[in-house]
Amino acid sequence: MTAPITLSHLLALSGLLFSIGLVGVMTRRNILLILLSLEILLSSANLAFVAFSRSLGDLSGQIMVFFVMVVAAAEVTVGLAIALLISRKAGNLNADELRNLKW
Amino acid sequence: MTAFQMVHPLLFYTLSGLMVVGALGVIFARVPIYAVLSLVITLFGMSALFVALGAYFVAAIQVLVYAGAVLVLFLFVVMLLDMAPEALFRARSRIMMVAGIAFGGIFLWQLVHVTVVIGGRPGLFTKQPVAGTTAAVGKLLFTTYALPFEAASMLLLVGIIGAIVLAKKKL
Image (cartoon, rainbow over all chains, first blue to last red; front, side, top):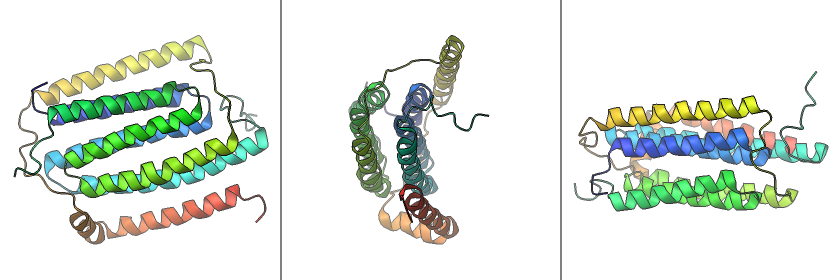
């Protein structure tokens, strides 16, 4: 525990969070919770950006985090509106039962 | 440079433990509202880690936009829809389950491998650290990244209009 924290520690944490989010996206059935797991994926990428920004002494990584947050906000607003619409039309949010587009 | 030389190990391990627990809570919680509240822990921990890494502006935005706006939006929708607790990890077929575990194992192996390789090289934090203050980030945002910044504002506008058009019953 006394070893100094290096870039690899931060990247390992980022990868761990990414794996957890990926498991969430693959195993959850509720569309809302799939969107929530996507937020974990985006956040873990943010952590990697900030870690490299700190390591390389370059602020561009933090600018990228800003853009990722903007994209996440836009994605969440549209995604939640679609989820609301689906629950209004289909009555539930189960991703397995939504196969209206299936031919 | 004593202000932000290095992340203290104790701080790092405490925060990362909190973040991982929060993230696990998101994927294991049966009640959706607990999953949303669990993600708040993860995002606050990440914000604290950003401060420790010198990314002050990004940390503030993280709390304001992510934990403040996005998760409140999630909470609103979860409360609006009144969802029943769902059954967890009902795999569609055995093949999918096996494939998922195999994929996860390969990913974890890659992760450990890469971490060990990069960790073998010392001095990755020896570069002069930069402070991600609002002034510094803003200056970069309005000079080098001015065009992507405008594109991002356009994207937000599209998001707003899209959400209104989709969610409104009658325009």
